[in-house]
Amino acid sequence: MVQPASVPVLSCAEARRWEAGLLKNQELEWVAMQAAGGGLARALEQDFLEIGGLPVAPRLLVLAGKGHNGGDALLAAQVLLKGRPAATVDLLLNFHPTTLRPLAARALMELRQTGAARVRLVTLTELKAELASYEICLDGVFGFNFRCPLDEVSEELLAWVNTHPRIRLRAAVDLPSGLGEVNAATIFRADFTYATGIVKSAVLLPANAHWVGRVRLVDLGFLKEADVSPTQEDRVLRPAVLGALTQFRSPQSDKRTFGHLVVIGGSHGYPGAVLLAVRAALRSGVGLVTALVPAFLVPEYAARYPEAMWVACPIDSAGGLAASTLPLVRARLARANAVLIGPGLGSEPATISWVVQLVQELKVPVVLDADALRPEVMAAAMPGAFIATPHRGEFQRISGGLTLPEYCANQQAVVVLKGSRTQIGRPAFADNQVSGSGSIIYHSLSGGPVLARGGSGDMLAGLIGGLLAQEPADLLLAACRGVVWHGRAADLLARSHGQVAIEISQLLEQLGPALTPLHD
Image (tube, rainbow, N blue to C red; front, side):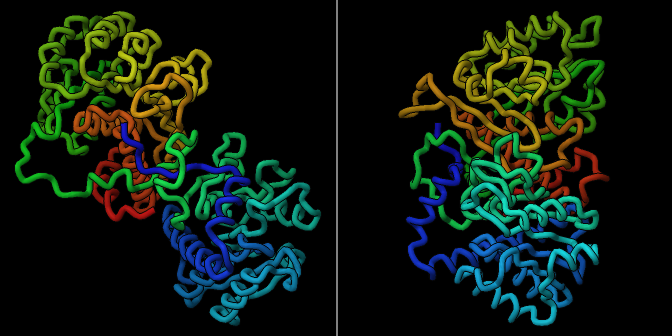
């Protein structure tokens, strides 16, 4: 099992030590600060597209401290001003200008030179009196060197900004001010947190989600694949995990080269889930897809999507796949490279009973999704040969109270735990062998609220299933690729159509564009 393209998550203390060893003089620090500022500005412009895009003359509020986070924020504002001649900045220096550290002072000078009359120094008293509208509020007051307690002036500022009714996007540089290994009583509430160089563990803690919002990595090249232990317990997936999907395929390929996925699902009560899963699988690059679904669905589905091989299966009195489906599945497993079971399957005991029997017989890896996520099904699956794709409620049903790392180690499974930030857990490995102790959790930072729709998970399962059929020996890679690909397509969909007025099936049209360019 190959380590997917990822970087480790570090504590604030670990990040301080790492950066101190990497940035050994002020010129190296300045180069990194400029890269952070430019990366922040580009990321802000991209994320703002989800709510219509920055206007021609945006008004920005920049809160700057005296250290590197303040410098990053100032340089990001400079880049935005360069790109928009009508943009303006209200700048609040949280500490007296004479206390700025050398690089923050240099960043302030460059911002003033670029913006001239478009940059206005303001006080909190003036901000309160004006209550102006801002497209972006950029928080660069404190970074990973923050120590409690918060001073009264900063506490008043953060509390006021958090309740300001006319800020469209709140962005934190690296960490929301007031958040760290020990949190202050008042914390900047961000819509997005842009981790500069290294993702700190504090921003991924569920308890901090309210303050952090969505997390982005502004990759400065600080961490390379070989620089850290591959067994780091928490890691962030990089877009490079999709790199192989952008390469030329062999000209000697045929449809069997890229695997055969068998999909089993659908019922009278849930006819659409399996269709979404099959459609996503067809876009995954897999060579063949066979779908076993209730017979009454086949005429319409085959007419609409003839690329898949649709097999009509009998249904029971509850409208789900009857036990006599099992021989039909067996007849098609000899040529299958992977199986997906669950989308729209239904939860009737008779259905689950024959699914348990099928899973016990499988000799190929399987993706278990939706109604197939049952403790008895998981117990029947071969350890190390299945991917489970639960949301939080389904995970509670199968985990028996275990945490994600505990469950992955116990079951020897790859688990895709879907949520506002999807996590992929797998058992810890040594020398490519199951060690039986510990787990590694991979975090995907792509995707967002646009995915909070029925059918999103079915499409993810189909995508993972199709990828698994192409490389059935590497379950972790299929899971990580599917999650990142799905999330990147969601980002593009939200940026082109907004977060609200879309149908989840529109995600399919973004899967191609999501593969290029693969920059972080």
